[in-house]
Image (cartoon, rainbow, N blue to C red; front, side, top):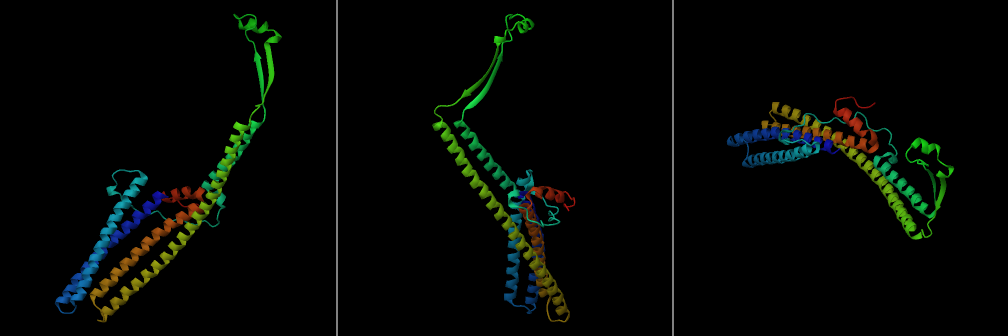
Length: 308
């Protein structure tokens, strides 16, 4: 998941950097138009200063976004283990899953919980093994003298072997003082059971928390993308209304440029929100159906249809 996160982060950086360049160009155009209007005594010096400040802010944002892109590029290169990451680019972001989990799987099916439960069961078996030290041990022994009376010939030795050369027995051993060593082993095994049980319960809590966090993150991403889409619609409407006002000589070209900048910003926010939602959806898949997460992600990343 760290590779997917780094991939999506760099994709978002590229969206921002491309938008930054266009916004700086628009802000420079606004500065030029405002200075021209100032020379013709149509705009004030304050308006010029405000336009310049807006340009500086846009340029600063571009510098910061390019720096962040370089950092995320290094993170992605390190995650996938490739050298020469300076020219690394993301062609397309990983699409979100075709569907989200419809039914929440029991938390005990999470791999971390399954592993913790296996550790707990193994610890319980360890107590039984340790307690076996209190009881006697039985051993069956058997021996046959293959040399017999003739060490020089195996066939002769076998035919001449007497019945007394067969040895069969049952050995019973019981420690007279098992309390110290065996008792310590049993106490240690019981302590491991307690520790494993705590680990099992902790794994269940963590799995539930991860699931709730993933669902909360996805709900937030979904709300953000809806708000961003509304912002894009409003920004587009603002551009159209400003154009109409210019045709009616009720507004100026700088106002249209400002509206275009606002629309670019809204589009950038919407695109980044879409990337964030895709990543949040994959986190939700991993939290709900962890055993199918890797398979589904690889299928989508390789351009194959997601599982039905």
